[in-house]
Image (cartoon, rainbow, N blue to C red; front, side, top):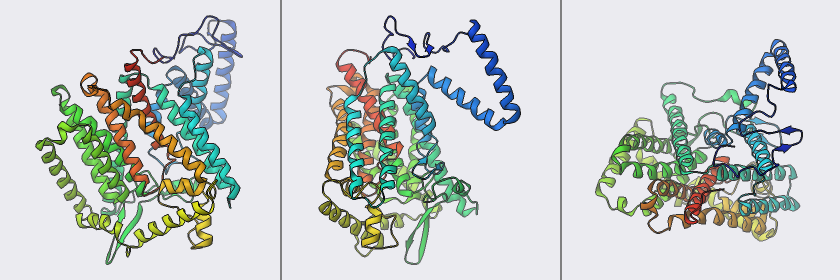
Length: 510
């Protein structure tokens, strides 16, 4: 493992059946020994034979080997891989009980690699309390099978909880310095920019009569996912399609953009205060504009509410900027430019305002649906208070008791979904996990003179805390709680908090 990534191996450590590990980054067997030579010859012969008869399989095997070797040498690379891969739903393989996403393979390899490093080094198991909270949530999810109509759906959704726990734990424990955290934020900015650009291209492609969808993925992927542009917003006399980028739903895209907006805004404020980082600040201003324009094309009410909540948090943590007339003038110009470009793309500003106002209009079909499923979820909590109706089974109950054609219905509220599907046990575990993750960056940001002593780390932590708030608010009006990008952001927030905790203890991370 690289320097600073774990404790020094104890004397006598370094054996793990049946291999002997040398210094970090080296292969188990030295090629200068006779056993190494025999192994190299055998592997070369097998690789040549495989390449001759099955070239595709040989290429896949070679890439897999490179991935394993790279993660063995630098386990921290999984953080950047996850940041790049998790803002995606469309690229997947459906195997029945589980939808397999591209990040699952490197995630599994990284878990094994970190486990082998941990066994070799003899270090302590970090973040045990965090893992225990995930275990409680998983246990509550499994117990919800008691009242389920489809036990298979319970197992399928429950298996996402260990995946979320693994993502959070790896990101939180492998980011071990402020420099690594800053590099992760750089990568996050680039990834969010690309995701937003594709979302904008979806809408612009409609005017050019270009099909920007990924429908060819439907033959391998989950049949319930959307592989083209999102469903339109229907208004009397008109309809406008909604961007969903690499997600299958515009509201999930809206939540991702809201979290990214808070992070980039905090970094933009930090870099704008320093002459040597003015170019970086200009780049982040562009990213903010692209994120906001894509949010307009998604027309996600939950996304806009998330952006508002995240922005308020970031500005509250930077009161000097919030009192600056220059900031508000630049923000006003930027929002005006975004609205102009949105109007050119077919999204009139009045439509966005109408979408927000109609959220409280009982005559609006979408709003009335949200209200009815929310009330029905509360009814399920009252009828099945302890274990709920089973993870993923809300739609079965709603379809059988309310509308038979809506078996895929959800409560459109993450908290109500957890309570209705896993009962008070799952709700208690969920709230404990939310508080356990959120309180750590909040406590770090309250350190005296934190913004002065460690300005970059303060900006990153403020952005991540704003992103957590944005995700929480967005999930009050939709439910994508178990999507992996949520837990990557949670892991980064915990990683930033660990750095503050190490600073307070006057000791580096072990």
